Length: 151
Image (tube, rainbow, N blue to C red; front, side):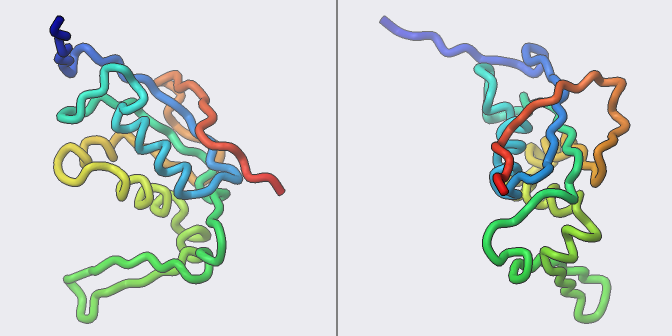
C-alpha cells in the first residue's frame, strides 16, 4: 500500500497573528520558538520550500534576559563598510538597554533559513520595546511560548 504525499500551496495555508510577551523569558529559547512559528513548523501543512508560517508580534522586548554572564561578555558585531575601520561592536548590555527590538530580531533571524525565503519570513516579525503595539486591527491572539523565569 502506497501513501500519497499531499502537496500544499500558499493559498491552502491560513496565516494567523500571535502576540508574545517577552517579559522574564530567556532570549535564545524565545527566539527559537518564535522562529518555529514564523517558519510554520508548528502546522501540519508545513512545507519547507515556501513560507507557510504565521505573523508574530513580540512586546516587552526590553525585559528579556540572558543566562550566565552573557550580559557582560556577549558582543554584537556589525560591519559598516562605508566607513573607515567600519566594524561596530556593542555589548549585550547596550543592546538590551538601547536597541532591544534589534536584539530579538537578530536572534530570530539567525534561526531562520538564509536567502530569499528567510527574508520573507523575518518580515512577519514585529517587535516592540514596550507593552503596546499598533497591530490591533489584525486581531492577534496572545500565546505563551516559553516558561517564565522563576526568581
